Structure formats: C-alpha cells, structure tokens
Image (cartoon, rainbow, N blue to C red; front, side):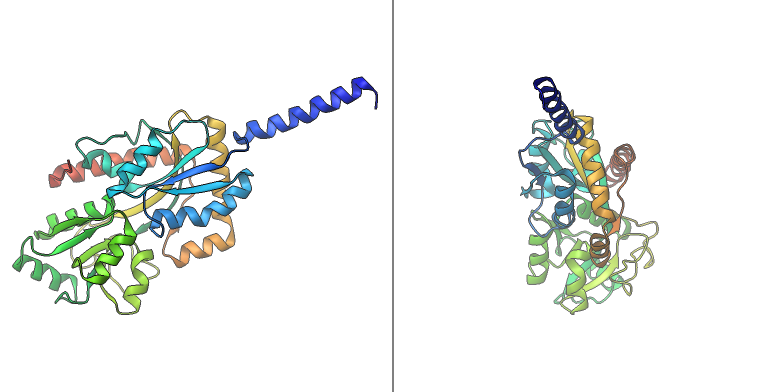
Length: 321
C-alpha cells in the first residue's frame, strides 16, 4: 500500500473508532453506578440483574457503588453532584426521586433539576408484614390492636415510599404507629425478623420467602393488584381501605447535563437487558413488573409522581427535618 493510501486507511480507522465512542459516549474508564441502598435491597437487586448485560451492550466495565442512608438521601445527593461526564449513573426509586422532594424540608438535591431520567426498570407493590409475636392475624386485628396502644407499636421504615404508604394507612385507619427508620430494605428486614419492630412495609422481594415459610405474617398488599408471588394475600384496598394504592418503582438516572448520546446509549442497553429471557424470568420470580420506558416517558412519570406525593404528604401533614 502506498503512503497516501496508508494515511487514508489510518484516518478511516480513527474515524470509525471515534464514531463508536461518540455513539456510546464513553471511553475506557469504568462507569460507576451509585445505588443509595445496601446490597440486597430492591434497587440494588434490580440494578445487579441488569448490570451484566448493560456492561456488554456498552462495552464498559460497570462498578456498583452502594451508598446506603436513611431514605437514600446521602447516596442520591452524591450522584446529583457527580460530574455529568457519562461515568456516573444512579439508581433511583419512587422515594429518592419523587417522595423526598416533599418529605424533607431541606433536601440537599432537587430530584427534577439535578437528574436526567433514563429509564424506569421495574415497579411493584409492597407488603405490610408483622413479626410472629404480634398478637394479630389480620389487618382488622392489627388495626384494633394499634387503636388500643396508640404510638406504642413500632413500624420499620426502609425508605420514603414505605414511610408514606405507612403514613397513609395510619391516616385512613386512624391509628398511630412509631416510625423507626433504617438505611434500606435489608436492615429493615432483619429488624422485623428479630422483633425489633412489630410491623413494616417491604417489597415481595424482601418478604415473600419469610411469609411463605411462616416467619412473618402478611396483612395486606399496598398496590391495587395482588402480588403474583403472594397471590393469597389480599390487597389493603380489598380489606376495606378504599383507594389505597402505593407502589415502588426503580429506575436509572444520570446527573443533569450528562450528554444526550450517553443517555440514549444507556437507555438502549437497559432495554436490551430487560428483554433478555433470563432477566425477565428472574424479575417475574421476584414479583416485579418490567417497564423499560423512554427517557421522555420516564421524565413524565417522575414529574407526575412528585405532584402525587406532594398532595399525599401535605394532606397527611408529614415532614422530616
């Protein structure tokens, strides 16, 4: 090959490599995914099921960075303040990205201003469960018990969605429980099993095995539909709490001003991962409903959820300093 042709060939190769990098928006550095809950929690589980196939799709190493804190505030704030260069992503949920906006008087981040939604991964209802030592075997029994002991029974709180679901239940049934906040689902699960708290609201992922093995009592499901992994547990709405419907969702976000080519590449990779048969089967087994919407659709969901929970929180007079 003569010199001019060698130069043209080299330039074409460089252009192709540049096009690939531009299309994906990444170089060779690992991508950090901040998860504001402990390992084993629903947001963490959702991301870890998607991560291997997302890594393949992007041609990048992904590092899951768990930063647990009460209601996910500290970890989400770290993600909000990260450089918008494509090397930091975050997993958010209905608590961190919608409820906290109204729950906290001084939230250190703005869920709408500081993040770009990429895609909603999954959604699910939650389950109101009790320790075996609680002298109640149904929701009606528990409400009667709680009315006899206002403020004496402890409710474990794993995150903002569970907290608001609990507060709404208290408001609609006129009971008063004492909220005990933990840094995510996993420590709350240990607290309810040990009897440190009497009741809690957690996802089917955290409760189904314990309910089915007789280690916890299930009083009701928070969503309008029964859970596919706990089909014999009625919804709280079925049990007479009219209109009661609270679900928790999990999704992928990036810091505001992250390049659009990065957003599109990550969205495509997550949707591909969610379409994989083994991933779909595992999410179904865990009681999740797969979503995989577009960035624009997800942004609209987040905005609606912020407004929905702002009203719920205002009506109930709930606020955390």
